[in-house]
Every structure is written in C-alpha cells, then in structure tokens.
Image (tube, helix red, strand yellow):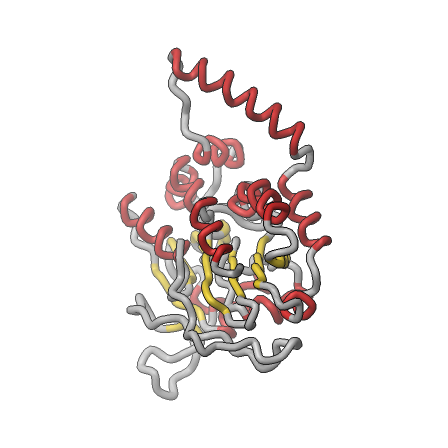
Length: 301
C-alpha cells in the first residue's frame, strides 16, 4: 500500500525535528462530516466520538488517507453492510485513543462495543475484517453478542482452509522444512525481533546526522503485518548495515506520540524513507513486498 510522496522541498531542517512539518494528506471525498467539525463547515457545535458511538449499528471512524480504512469499507460493502463512516480530526482521534487504547485508524464499533481496527486491535479477538470473514461480526450485529470462540473463529478467518490433496502434503513438508530452517537462522519470535531492532536503533537525531539515508519504521506489538514483516526487516537491516540507518519506533508507546504525530502515522507498519540530505522521499504503509522495499532502500544509497 503506497502513499503519495511528500513535496520534494520538505526538509528535516533540525535534528530535534522541531522545524519539520510533514505534508498534508491529499484531499479525498468525505463520507460524512469530519468529527470535531460542524456539518456545514460553519460555527456549529462539534460532534464528538462519544456522541456518535451507539447511534448506528455499525460505525467506522476513519482517516482520509488511510488505505486500511478504504480496504475495510470495500470488504463491508462486498458483504452487503453499510456502516456509518466518520472522518476523524486530531481531537476525535485522541478521544478514541483514550477510550479504546488503540492508536491507529480505523476504529470500528458495533453499537457501543469496540471491535478493533481493520485486521486487529488491542485484544486478541479484535479485528473487523477477520470477524467479518468468520461470521462473528454478523452475529454481533444480529444478536449483540460474540460467539464464545471468537478468537478461534478469527484465526480460521485469517488462515485459508487447506485442501486435502497431494499438493497439500507436499506443501506441508516444504513448509515444515522451511520453518525448521528459519528457526535455526532466526530463533527469535517476531515481536522479539522487532524489540531487538528497536533497541539496536540509533536515536533518530543521530541517524539524521550520520550522512546516510534513514528508514524509519513505526510498528506496534499487536500488529499482525508488523510481525509478519519482522524477519524480512531483520535481514534487510543486516544487509544494509553501514549504508542505511534503520530506526524502529513503537507507535503504540505513548512516549513516541510526538514522532507519530510528526510523521502523520495513520496505520502500522508505516515506513518513512529519509535521504542523507534529510528529505522525506517516500512513505509506504502496510505489508510491503521485499522487492518494493529494496527498491525504496536503494534510493537512500
């Protein structure tokens, strides 16, 4: 999932980042008034998330430049569901962060019940799309309650049901061998890999002062795509050591809130590619294929 690159004149002018203001997201059609602004754009009273939650059977709070929000809305539409969608401003997003413990859009509510974001959430069972695919979201809409095994249904929805044939047997053997080899080469689990990369990262001001390009990755421990990409990012960090700085930032940690805001992080994983001249060249969001990731890294050399 790609975002349009920022203006080429956008410069990280100081090591403290105080002078850097990230570019505004490109304008997109709005589905409803921005939360925190009046519908007519005049001086009406602001609508807050608390006032909206519970007012519709299925409610989605989104951001205009968020690809996960667009993907979720397409999935819901394909299932014949029509959520009420509201775009968030900064105050609305902060209110939902405090209410739910989740830092990224979208925020999905069934009635007054928070069910997470697009693929996951602060609790293991959360994630609107897995719940939708498993049938648990429809049950929640119909009866107001989740099935007792919602987490198991989610896992089923995330993993395609295998076909019992010869190809499956061959694939299973290959997968087992690959898993064994991976565990021998990379014995750390994905979250530990992410934490290790973060602990070994140079501070961002130091990275920007090094005269090398810098990749800044925002992740969250509960993010499925962050965990999936962790082994690849770990290997790339080793391959590009000494040529590109890798800086990992836990976007779910409140201490990093200023960086999350400066980089306009709407979803994780979020990758910012900064040149040796401190220009933000490109932003990528989501599960980026290795070929695309390496192409962006080569721009920093």
